Image (cartoon, rainbow, N blue to C red; front, side, top):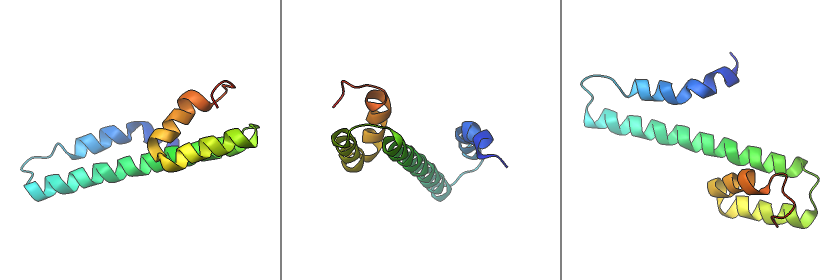
Amino acid sequence: MNIRRILPVLPFIVLLTACGENVSAGEAMAGGMGIMAIGGILALIIIVLAVLDLIKKPYPMEKKLIWGAIIFFIPFLGALLYFILGRNKQSVF
């Protein structure tokens, strides 16, 4: 099974599993925890991809250290900022 085929439809699968009938409060809470777990896993994947991309790029060491610190101290937001601002731009840091 190819993971790239599953990732785009994963949010829809999660939403469909929450659409059952006669859901008790405990089941609703467990469903919310599952969504948080999936969100955490996706955030971890984004952070790992940002770090790997940062390591691969031929940036000066100072730039790599600054972006690495941003990704480390502000994990999810730092990775998003790196992908939005840091890639292929020489003027940022």
